[in-house]
Length: 210
Image (cartoon, rainbow, N blue to C red; front, side, top):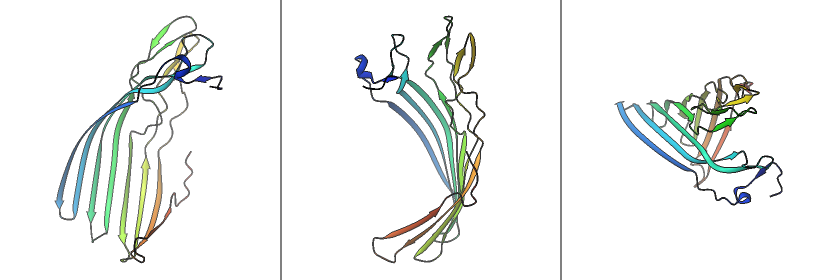
């Protein structure tokens, strides 16, 4: 109530509805051999009534929150696992996704021109990410896991805004570069009933990612 820049919905006599997400998934699994297992998942997700900040109805008033956001995402996930022992295996999993903001909000220039946003990438969402690693059971009491986590390039938001009477990208920064980090964990168990201890190290080679 004391924020001069943003007001909650109650400040303008409105009630927010819960955000709604509808997801559909189709999964298929196949074992090529007893040691090679795979799964493939296709998914589609739609989110409606997302709570976002909007410009006020009265000029000069604080912005308010409203159920105005809509997004759609679709893609596929794949996983492969090759066993070479009871708890020893190589694994690979990857996700490809296409995410779009489908709100179709309107923005007005100072001169009164109105532009309705097309579907756009909301930004900071990688199209591809995944892991490849190995899990090795050292003994009945210790298990090691080493993996590489990869996240692909992340574009900035494709939203448009007015600069005078010209439409320009709302975020003109360069995309966030892709990155790969090497991680590891060591798990100790069975030496004390009900107790498990895990030590993990992330970004083992100190990669500089911003």
